Image 1 (tube, one colour):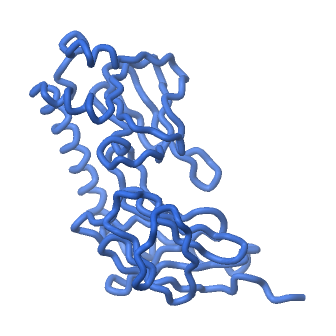
Image 2 (cartoon, one colour; image 1 turned 90 degrees about the vertical axis):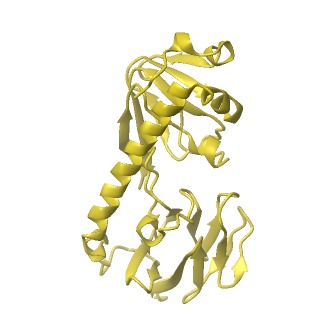
Length: 263
């Protein structure tokens, strides 16, 4: 719950208050961003694009905050779109402004309470996931869909496997309890030490194969076999290669030929 009012903010922070009319886009998925937002009034819709369609992740209200990944992890790419449902008033905070905001004990307590609630929601969600067989979350392998390639990442200790998209990017990371964003390969339940970043890496399906790319420069490392990856540089992956994301070790398995046989 938000424990401060706009009138109780310091003068420098009052200058960071902004209003957006209903329907306005605050930021878009993929945009660069270095600031977070705290909602003082109104409702904000968080969404992302999944398989070409827009998917709503959450509706946030007074006291909620969003976009904090840009500040806390120094990760400049927005993982979702934020749009005003009603007229909203938000406080835009960069890292320096956030530190100023947290000097107010009531403000700091309010943020901690909301963060605690989100972590509790995530814990409950993970508990539900671990009670359900992993196979129930995975689509069956199609006999024929015109798919030229099909591959998975396998986690041998747990027996879990994660399908890779045959076209475009497969995102790898852990669930973000703040924005509600879950990557295609969610390693939350396999990573109790939280060594995997929320947006850690992607595997791109290109015409000539699959490429692993670390997309966050502030991770605990991404490895292909024994090689540590350079951030933003693509590395081709092959059948039976080992991919280590933080502390989680996965193996690449190709389940179909990347090219159909010649006629």
